[in-house]
Length: 392
Ligand code: HEC
Ligand code: HEC
Image (cartoon, rainbow, N blue to C red):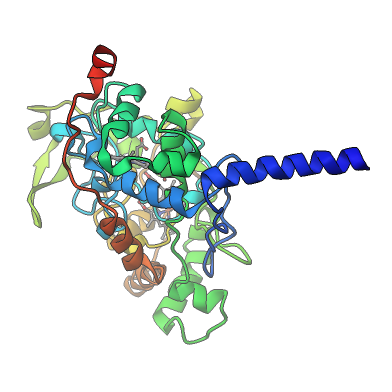
């Protein structure tokens, strides 16, 4: 008994020691009405210090090689944590990224990250954009860590938060902890469906819900549970968008010339300066031909804020998305059998869109403002991070 007691005491002391270094563990962020409890990996508990550090890293343009591009410039807080002006992302020095920036809202629940599900933890995911040559283009993990070490805004912060200076693991942990707090629900739909407030949705939106769950067949993939809804089955499906791209069925593209000013170009125009980047979707992860052109079902919360849509941003509005499904997606050998022509009337299409617009959470503005306030100055480090071994 005594031994057990001493052992337990030692464990408690060890626990307290690590707590002292890490600061108080904040209660897991409280998911609002409509969301399940937030999954938090035991090895990366959420603390307020960690979240604040992660938020600053997320907004820091100096995390890119030439100090210009932050995570928050593709996942723009005021644009639904995505880029409303870009179908596909644009990385360092204007380089093309082949896919649409997904939103960070509720990313805590995504089990397989990226449109093709190739990454499984937010902690590891960050190294994708940080090192991709056409995104933040850093030469190595060590370079990023050394740069953070040199920036005065981070002085002492990793030490206070993790009990040690920055390294490849805790940079990912801080960014992951922050992103797990970017939760948004308690939408009018949630207040109506889960909160049982009869007047939270109007008649048109309620009709839209019935179509979503019934005739439209949407909820077969965009799941609504009895106690909460992620609007995603976390699975991968072929709706034909990827197929159409690969097979060059999409002939016209909307190109932005200046904010709000668009023109249409054809594939022929585009070939003149850049060949299309191949994208076979889930197949690239599993190497199973049956997975060709499958992409993860995105959650639909805040979807009114996160245009344009689909993995390639090829659909500009929710009306376009509903038209797309009404036509039965795009025919191809692997088209998901759940995607088929719906025969919706004009009124039904409007109802469906009205329902999708009722999925906006109650805190999007607050989350955006918090992120913007955390943005540090752009002042580059005083010395070249790569000089670390030369001058120490
Ligand atoms: C150049 C624009 C750009 C930058 C900068 C960028 N991202 Fe992304 N992000 C994207 C795109 C595009 C995807 C989807 C890529 C894919 O599926 O292949 C993505 C995917 C993600 C995902 C997966 C979301 C999901 O639903 O699967 C997360 C999380 C994420 N980014 C976080 C970050 C973080 C953290 C940073 C900074 C370290 C960052 N991003 C920097 C464009 C960007
Ligand atoms: C077979 C499963 C399936 C069905 C049925 C389905 N979806 Fe989807 N939905 C998806 C997948 C997969 C994507 C992502 C496709 C991509 O990225 O190319 C998607 C994308 C979307 C998007 C874009 C979200 C974003 O952030 O880009 C919206 C909106 C949407 N679906 C609404 C609907 C509606 C409305 C219906 C019913 C009319 C419906 N879906 C039926 C699987 C499905």
